[in-house]
Image (cartoon, rainbow, N blue to C red; front, side):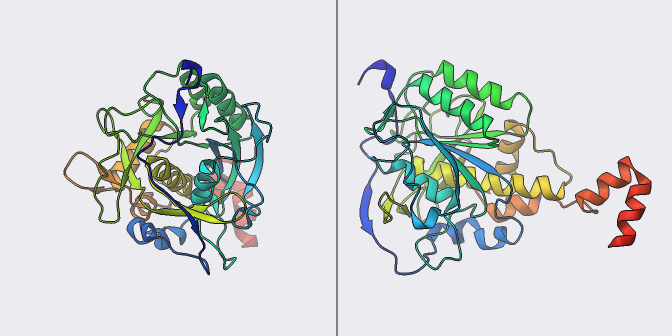
Amino acid sequence: MSRREHYVTLPPDVRIKPSVAPLAESVSWADASLGIADAWKLSQGEDIIVCSLDTGCFVDHPDLEGAIFDAKDFTGSRYGYGDRHGHGTHVAGLVGARMGNDIGIRGIAPKSRLVVAKVLGDNGAGSDTDIARGILWGLSKGATIFSLSLGGAFGMPATKAAIRDVMSSGGRFAFAAAGNDGGAVNYPARYDQFVSVGAYDEHGRLTDFTSKVGRLDIVGPGVKMLSCAPGGGYQEMTGTSQACPVVAAIGALALSKHLRDGGDTDLRTTADMREHLQKSANDTGRGYWLVNARKLLEMHGVATQPAVERDLVAELPWRYELWRRRQ
């Protein structure tokens, strides 16, 4: 592999179990761990666009119907944005698979919309330049959450610069998989502009393969994760690549609720997101935090007035009075 293509999806120790076919809409073991049913009472990711940067996507998967807003290839693949690898379709399903269709699985942010940037080729490898181009394209499409289940041991200056452009106006957040080699946190997760995501198992234990040397911000479920596969089927995958889109989707839930309801806490910078995730997480006392969707959304105190009411009071009191009389 050339130096230009040292950013990859899956180190060899990540396990894949193909040909899983749920008979009805499946509930993951992770849902109970995350408190996702309670979180969905507060937000399902409405009005949030998530940019998934990976190996493309099988956009015709029945569980992704209505989920994909746009898709584009940056690798020059003969298959365009289509996913010949399987990784990209899997992570997209973890974010935005639709619920209520009585088939397959449910994504963590089932009412979010996805833009899919194919920045890793059909062999699972890609370049810093292509990843950066995908990030800026996602920005142009209105994405506010960016999920990168990829990494490498070397710095990624173009990716870092692109994310800096994304963050310049605030209110946008990037998540990256910490890595699966058990050593130092990979790039780009190592950069401060990203929330670095590790993986825990069904027993709430940090996985041995999670790269943890350095800054590990938050840990999400990443073992035997069932999601979509090219062709319309399903498969299980294990890795920080799976934990990353789960945590990114939880970020989308929180951002959706924040934009709708306001609240007493700010949510504009990566530091804000990192702090909120850790404050609401289950602290293991061992230097890592297990993400908790329910607590994160409950931590965002809803303003005493709806956002539209609060804004009218502050800006145009006479319009507020007219609005109130119509309620």
